[in-house]
Image (cartoon, rainbow over all chains, first blue to last red):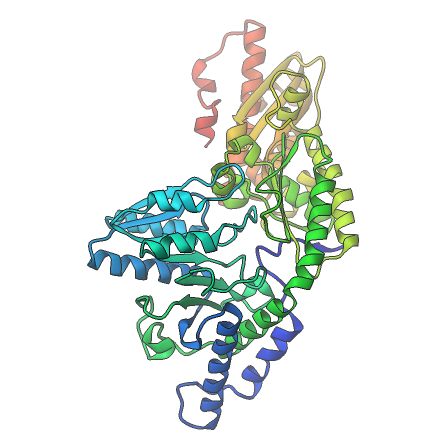
Length: 396
Length: 140
């Protein structure tokens, strides 16, 4: 059986998204900046794509800027707020310890440029509180950037409440909603969001397209100098098919959201219940406040990359926060942020489901993972020491 | 593919995996914190490695490196095993990705650690410089 369970990494494109893109590759291939008919037809398509995305986020059409993806949107949002902050002598930024690297690495760079960054603790459940944000805000704070839902452990943050705190203190609030857009109901107005990043390939749209919502009146600068595209904020000829695919995919995801999530939550809960039957395993992230498709579990005594390779040989595509899957020696910063020790974080498994997954697939995962874990534990000197009582279990 | 066919073969079908109750020597290198530990058991007779077993906590290349390294020293004199380099293990595996080379270094280290254990247990004198690489910090 083939099971793709890494939808937080990327998703299969939907038929709707592909169909929305094809005409803009085959027929309406004009440059939206061109005056003649197929150019203007492409320009109209770009407008309609922007309008569709705006409608699904609850904002105005001219508050949406297309980008190359979530990382670019995060970079642009943070850089813009920092630029305006520096002009006003406000060089303090608040974020959390478990943001995506597109945010963390941008903040690291800003620190080198003289900014001060406060990273809030996310506790063992992987959730930051509005009170923490409130306490951390200073007179010189120019930006609060907190992800909507975590990409590894799926925990959902109290965005509306955090937004209210920022609004009350007149601090710009950006949220990286790459894992949330198309998966959770979002309304930027109601949730007090000033800037929001999203990425189309996380909700069955194409890769290489994202968007940044910027509330009217909030300043943004451009990462890419060039033409007048995106109202002068991002030079370069528009990725018209990509924008059409992104808009169609988001529209479809939002339209089916309730129905999809009701199904996904059941699959997720069955998967969590089934996998936690494995001795010395633990769920990462809050049990309730998590994305409908996210399961993330640590198994003591084994390492994640070998787990993934063996699962792949059984047709299951998954992900891990082990060092060996990241190319560095440290395991996932997210798992460390919620307090998992290094040796436990190395043995993590993330399964992220989408509406493509079935009950049969979930049962297949539940039947295969325990065998693979047992096989690896049987060749693990760490597991032997635990079994022989030479070391104490970290996960009971 | 990330790994060569040889690596995948040794990962999927590791040779000499397991423990040894009557081992003459045991060597261990690595650290669970860093995500890899290798333990090597040796059965030695007349300076010949009659049998070898390994246990590894680690990624695919760590398991494959352990498997290949044990194959390369089985039935060989201790002097040959002492000369086994991580480069030889990597070559036998048909290469490893650059960031995985340290796995082969660990395999070399685990074997040296086991031989050092054998020398120590049997009061055999040796040049301490021979084993200066048997520590995980160096392996990384």
